[in-house]
Image 1 (cartoon, rainbow, N blue to C red):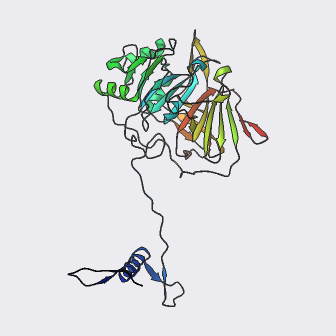
Image 2: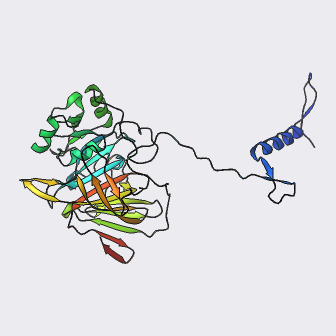
Image 3: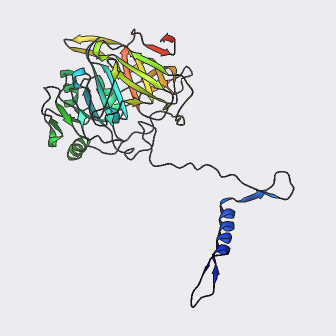
Length: 357
């Protein structure tokens, strides 16, 4: 029995007819017809094409769209000491640079943020001059808690926009109670961004796409693998490849590197190991060569690629060149740069096999 709607002033409308008519119309709109390939005169439906939708501006740091893609990045010096773990905000950085600040000893990070805006960032530590050319190449506003006299001399000359916790402009930094100094220095994205604005720093990035990127891969069929980076003792690092997520999970000192903000493990899509000259120059300070060129290995998508890293000057972006002198396309996602001594042994373990690169 057909279902009818009755009205005192209008004729009866048969809903079944309406539904059928609408169905035919919608089908014809959604499935346009095309001549049959066999020339029979009959028609066939054209298959729907996948839609390529761009969600928004693409971050030059990650190669992915995000709300902060056009923001000028803020980079913050973070501690590498075991006592400071878990660090706040470390998993939310778009790009992280790790290197020794003492030869064969302590490592520190420059964590660079734009896409995500951590509610807390720390433990914040002192600047080292080796990070400054890299920060400039990534158009960073440089956050730090004091620094070596080498770094402070450069920063006072105005080589880069910076926010120093020792002068703490506009209250960008604070000390957390219950944590011993010097590990209790923290900031927030909002405080740093507000200070940068009041200091009249440029807030929109000048960065273009840093590296060519290939299309995102949600997963791969590559085997699980472990990359071991030979920093000493408590600073030794490893990255475990997960084919299901096509990302690398970070271990520090043999245990997962967690984020105090998110309570989640640190993950990245691209790990780059850069070999260079590292030497002690004065007391507790060393020198890491970050300009020029050297050997490197890019780990992504469960594979590794030998490259030559190149950075001609402070403002030139870091490049990863193949044997053909073309830039290696990187996987979209977060990037970690690991600077090590040129003679250090890095291991990459796939299943039962171990290769030293």
